[in-house]
Length: 400
Ligand SMILES: [Zn+2]
Image (cartoon, rainbow, N blue to C red; front, side, top):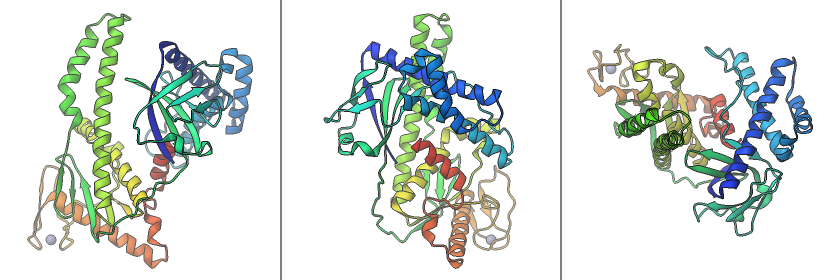
């Protein structure tokens, strides 16, 4: 699945129409959730049928395209099934009981209710919400019109702090011919350096949020000084949201470019399977950990790994920083000790460099082990063996 995104250009009335469509989506999703809470044994199919009932009962809901209504019921089911899954797998901590939404930001159409013009620069929404014809603003190199309509599986309108965007999910695969480099690499992500690889190279941590903090603090202050419900407050809120949007885009851009370079210059990549959720519990580090954005980075590494068809292997984090990468002795050290000094063999390495070597060694053991049992190594491409559930969720999110 490829996602193409354009910014939408439309009038004030059209923006209001988009808001109205999104409100209907939220209404249907929450109604479906309510039904599930009230009655026992509700299935996905029941929710689908309930959409038609709602459209009859509430005339305004009928304005939205019927498949878009179905899509909102699917969103509700998605939240419910994720909750079930977490319960079944006995995930520690919160199970994510589905909640009502009050800040829905997108409306999703399937294959009806919209039309792309042959020039590929305009889209018209044809349902009762009266969104009408909108101009697609964006990268001229993205030619949406070159894809047959059948391949466009979903069209979503997403609201962001700086306007509305249109996303097209296109059923197509992007394959890149990987040029073998003969190099394998293990990476250890950290706070001091964004990552350290098994060769001892480091990539500096960009700290986008820390850098923007001063500006954001000022915007926060502006907002808190404005009177409640005033139009100036609305403006200040928008400015603040834009500030955060910028940080998240910088982070995404950094992660994506770095992942692409890493994948195209190696034939195997090993990383540590981090439990970021647990790490964030440490309040002193929470902000820095979020700001680092390893989750985003590793998702892109897996994504590019799949595209290049090279193995991306996640290894368990146990002992990677304690074990000596030369002789295998356990050298206990706390987080603050930055250097690995082995008393058995006398090797001195940077702590993260030592960990990265261990990570690579673990991954090599694993892939060789897989080969021995007859499973082709390509199964490992995109790191699916180690983190099937996570990887699935990540791709599911992109696809859905
Ligand atoms: Zn040693």
